[in-house]
Image (cartoon, rainbow, N blue to C red; front, side):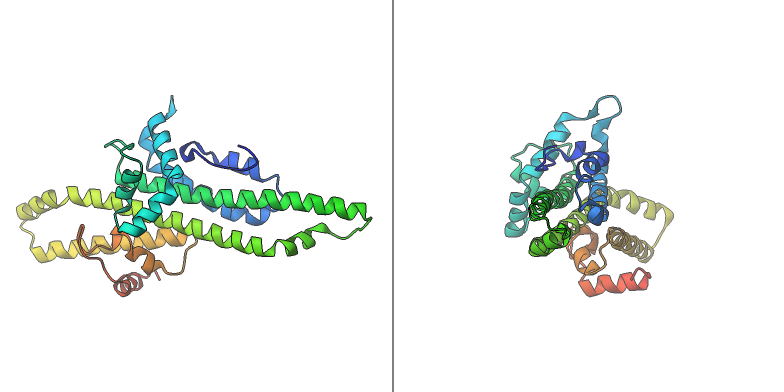
Length: 277
């Protein structure tokens, strides 16, 4: 790691390395909780790729390269997703020019984008820490030259107030984006599972003589469970505002696989009915 921190390879990030690099700075303790949250989101993203990691050899070079390439092209991926209204995983595959193998699941690619956002939060704080530290040292030397015993810290915080506001806002936005992408990754995983279930569920229902009404009730219960789980994941990561709106934009909100989505109000009613909010 250099002073200008860039986490090029998210799969190979270790939390202790981040802490070791950043704890030297004066502002570290004040922002430690955000750094901990960001590293936690990286770990959640890495969990989707765990099949590419072995105790003997570590991470697969192909997986490391794919996730690093997602980082490198993340801005283009986001712009393409917004411009063309494509599924996020499709945008990633298109932006990488077919680099991901067919074995890379949609959820893994979206989780890689989540890791990028979490890394950006860490990098934003790291750059702020470094720039502020340099100015703090400079100000202290200036005060010493003037034989002035005034504390340099308040002076620097005042001078850097607007930058600090920007950093706090950017970091919060990146953390929210990372959480949102992890929800999308979860939605992709659910989508794959649901595509493999209908036939076996249908045969089981026929053999057991279940009515379609009972099957429908079970499907609704399972959908509501996933919506509540998504909301609880967001709250666990510190997001309490706009939860229904965020869920509305993911596959978790689909009435049926690949079909129409529930409205924000319907999602809120489900969350209230289940006692989540």
